[in-house]
Image (cartoon, rainbow, N blue to C red):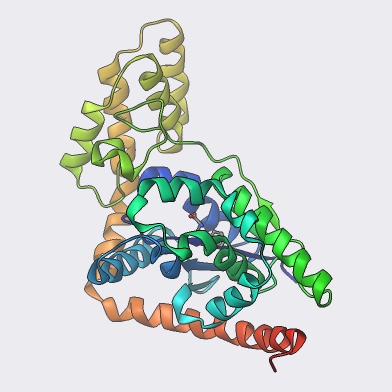
Length: 318
Ligand code: TRP
């Protein structure tokens, strides 16, 4: 039997190449080795103030982006978190186990609270209990996450241990699946990670049209670090031979920034073309997206209901 794996992503806007190389590419590759659950974390997104219509659209668009990039509903269970009721049920059980002091230690809680000081809601604090529920509801053992989520994963392990000690041994030890994905840096601020919060000039979204991609790369900062970043980004999209050649030129101090930018632009546009075609095709047929998410939720719900019944019996509410 294949090993199981789960991961989620919040619907906070369109996927950019930093998200793709850092997260989604890895997911796509893992689909063959593992039996996978991938979901859109729309409940986690409620911790941020978002207009309901916007949340709805961002969720739909993210589903389209992920499918267009290669998340394959025939291989993986792909769904929306809020469609499977067990996530919130298990969160409550975990809320009653996890010490508030552990939640208050979380870096993401501190960062997010600082970002929205007028909206430090309880959901921001208990966010990791929901994340632990996401993972443990399906009894998966492997979770591919970036460095920034390691602390949440560690807290999931603590919660599982607390449950197992207080009641009975039920939840497995979860392990992070780390991959050697690159940290893609911002185009307009080469020492910072590519990020939506740094504005559109920071990133290339997978939906950016040709002119936008050309303009953004043209405007990319080319100080010493900036050039290094662009050169390091190139091989993920471009030709290996050309990369070797440009690296030689770079070392000899002869690489022209304009040439590097032109080659990078061509390679990224080539990469984006088939993906944007997929996006267009999916958008012609929104019902297909809803159907895929619905079917995914049904599959996930089967496992979730079975495990949730066990859990309810163990804690004495069934
Ligand atoms: N908190 C994660 C993030 O911000 C998203 C997420 C929610 C997640 N639930 C998860 C990731 C479960 C892995 C497993 O990126």
